[in-house]
Length: 396
Image 1 (cartoon, rainbow, N blue to C red):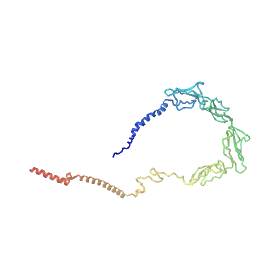
Image 2: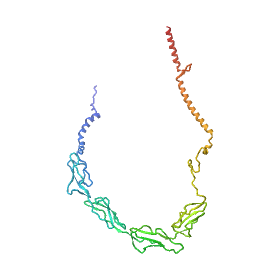
Image 3: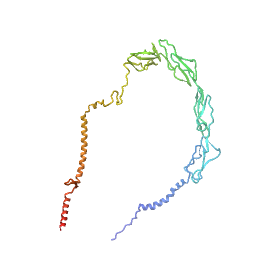
Image 4: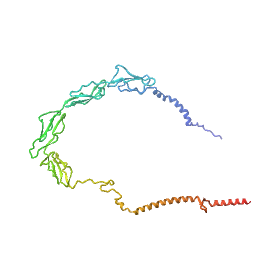
C-alpha cells in the first residue's frame, strides 16, 4: 500500500529574507521620490532679506529657485533714496541672495510753528515719520486741544495727527459766597489768572463774634479753578478750661474763641499727664484734650538689671541665688554622683568580663600559670598513642 503524498507546501519566508529581497528593492525604487523634494529644497534660496523701510512687492513664496528675482517697494511712511530706480535681489546658484542695502528712508512731516502764548517740543528732535511733538502754554494760559501730536502715514504721504491746539487765557468765575461773610471785588464777574480775593466775616448781632474757619485768601490758579474752597464764618466758642489741682499760666480770658491758646501747669506735689498746651478747634472743642494732674511725682520707668529680662528682678549672683537653688542641698548632688559612678562601673565591668571570656576560650594555664594552647581530649589521646608507638620502635 503506497501512501499518497500531498502537495508540498511552499517554504515560508523568514522576516530576514523578506526584508533583504522585497523590502530592500522597494526602498531603492521609492528612494528618488523622497530625495527629490529634499534636493529641490537644498537647491533653493530661503526667504529674501527683510528691511525696516521696504518690503517685497509680491507675496512671499516658501522657496526660490536660482535666477528668481524679488522686487521691493518702500513701506508707508518711507521714500526711495533713488526715485525711479528698481530695488531688487536675485537668488544665486549657491542658494544665496545677491547683496541688497536699505534703499528707503523715513518721510518727514511739515514743520510746526509755536502756538500763540505757547511753544512746542519735538521729543526726538525731528519731524520724521513716527516722531511726536508736545505742546506747552505760557503761564496764565491753558491748552485747548491735544497736548501731543504724532507724525503718521497713509499710503502715499505723512501727516500730523489731530489739529493744532491753542493756548487760551485763564479766567476764573467768581468764588462761592459764604454765610455771615463776604470777599473783596465781589462785584466782578470774571477773575484773571493769579488774581486774589480775601474773605472776612460780618459783625455778629449776638454776644459772640464770628470766626473765619478756613483760608481767608483764594487765588485763581487755573481755568475756572481756585486754590481752595471758600472758608466759613460761624461762632466757635470753647468752654472755660478747668484743670483740677492745676492752673492756667498763659491764655487768660473769659471767652475762648477759635484758635484760642491756653497753657497749664500743676500745683506743687502733682504731675501733669497729657499736653500742657491746648487750642480751641473749629468744632468748639479743646485739642488736644485738657490734661490731668495726678498726685505724686512723675513715675519713672522701672530699671532692668543686665542679667534679668523683667524689671525689678535681680541678677543671679553667688550672693543671691534663685529661689529654687536655695532648696537644692548636698544630698541630691551626692546621689547623682553615685548613680553615675555605678553606671560607669557596670559598663567597665562588662567590657572586662567579655575580654576575659574570650581569652579563656583560646588559652589554658599549666601548673606554673603559664598560658598554653588548649588541647581537646581527642587530641591528647592521639598524642599518647603516637608516643607509645615511637617508644616501641626504639626498643626494637
